[in-house]
Image (cartoon, rainbow, N blue to C red; front, side, top):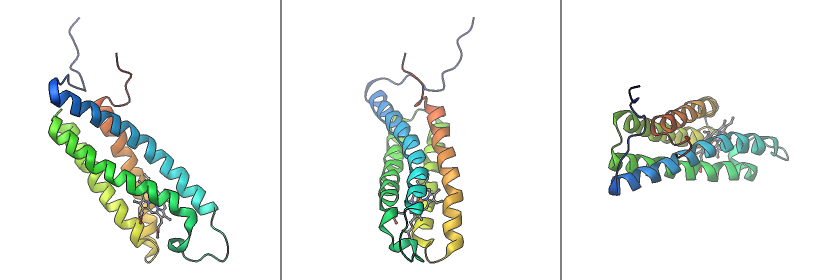
Length: 146
Ligand code: HEM
C-alpha cells in the first residue's frame, strides 16, 4: 500500500515547534469562534431596559472582549504559519482568516451606526468560522496526535 501525502507535513526543529504552536492556537480559535456565536446570543438576549443602541450595552462586553482576543489570535496564527511554512494552502487560509477578522472587527464597530453593516458582521462570522475550520483541516489542528 502506498503512503498517502500528509495534510500536515512533518516539520522538524524550530519550524516544527512553531507549527505545533500554530496548530494549538488554530484549535483554540475554532473553539473561540463557536463561543463567540453563543456570547453574541447571550448578550443580545441579555439586553435590558429601553435599549436602542447595542453599542451602549454592557451585556455584549464578553462577546466584544472575545472578539478582540480572536483578532489578536488570527494575527499571531498568520505570523506563526508564515514562519513555519507548512505549505501554500495553510498560509493562504491563515491570511484569509486574518483578513476576514479585520473585516469582522470593522463591521462590529460600524454596525451600531449603520445597521446593515451589523447584519454583514453576523454573516461574515460564518466565513470566519469556515476559514478557521479550513485552516484546522489543512494543518491537522483538530486531529488527535498519534
Ligand atoms: C466568529 C464569530 C464572531 C466574531 C469573531 C465576532 C467578533 C466581534 C468583534 C471583533 C467585535 C468588535 C469588538 C469591539 O468593538 O471591541 C464584535 C462586536 C459585536 N458583535 Fe460580533 N463576532 C462574531 C459573531 C457575531 C454574531 C453571530 C453576532 C450577532 C448575530 C455578533 C454581534 C456583535 C455585536 C452586537 C457587537 C457589538 C457592536 C458594538 O459594540 O457596537 N457577532 N464582534
